[in-house]
Image 1 (tube, rainbow, N blue to C red):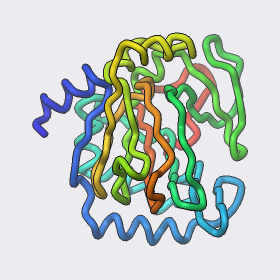
Image 2: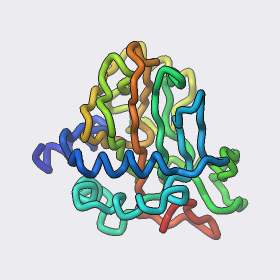
Image 3: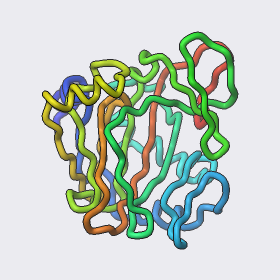
Image 4: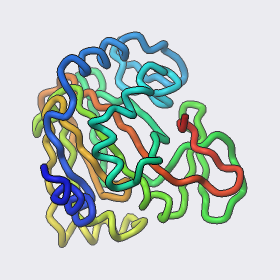
Length: 238
């Protein structure tokens, strides 16, 4: 994909799919590293199968260098600038032991190191011991998410669906989401192993439960070049 086409896709649609970005050798190294993640508060296991890891870079520091891989930087730098860094990293999988659907939503929270009373930030919550907060939409509008696919993520095993252009509507209420769905067709986004889906956090997206459950492992990296106000600090930023 040419750079201008890529930039137009992110600006207009809120997402782009870039195939064959990550080599099989790197993917294999990542999977091997994930198999060594220590179980604890940040991990989720069902019937012996690891299906989610929050706070991923602290659980698996060896992945930090991969977040700055030249191929990933090529996707981030033209949009966020050279100062962008990972501010949240998550791993998740769908298997026969952990197979769920995700309803239509926007990614509305960020993770931070400590709670501070700052106008526009809230409500607050805690997941796996990590502080989450909803920031003003302007913070989310200046972020970019990379979904790195360690396996094929196709129609039959829970590929994302999105509503193109919905990222430009700001933070939406439940009623606004339902109304938009009535008039705007959704787009299914299958991605093959090694491909990267780039998306804005405010893009409306959902995924179905897998019809043919097998591994559907994804690394979810959120990037920002912005500093948070006051004493707020990104949780995962190096």
